Image 1 (cartoon, rainbow, N blue to C red):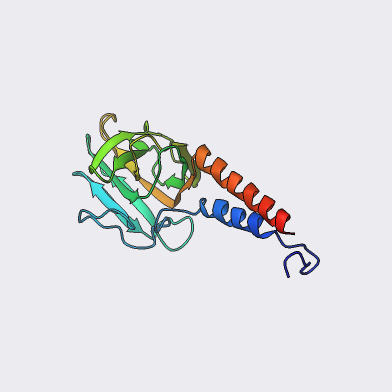
Image 2: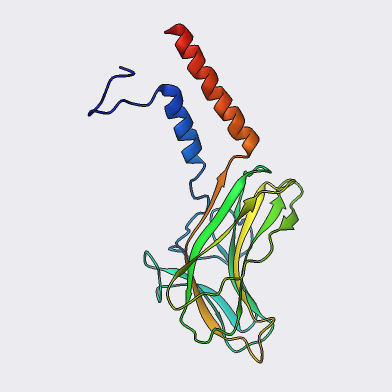
Length: 217
């Protein structure tokens, strides 16, 4: 029965349990295969539900068992003594709403010392109806070290966007004389929280449900 104690603990009221389920569900990782355990593709769209690798000449993007943080594999990116080139991987996350708060998190490391290349982490915001880019975040440029370290990029989904293209890349556009090094990426996640107006409506709905239940009691 509702309100009975189970194992010495009083269960949550129905409305509180519902609110808890709805709010915690928003924190689920919306990226598929954030640990890069499955092969990345390099064959064009669609870009939802998998990682798409890309690279220029003298660079490569690949799955590797050389240095996983967890699991059996990670994403490997390399540039081999080449200027003005790049390598990376991206994945599209759909179904977003402007005003949502997002957090992109992950871990990266390098076996190269010195690491003579740059890292770029960003989100390219897209509109699925017009199939166009409507903006992007400034590049985050954390420098990986020999041990895995965490990185984060967070903010709000902008107006006009319903899709986040999550990008991790390395590049040698600004290296001198040549770009060279290897970077490993693992355990990436992209989570969102509803915009404040939706949270307010959710809270009001919960209060209304509480009031209704009290009147019937």
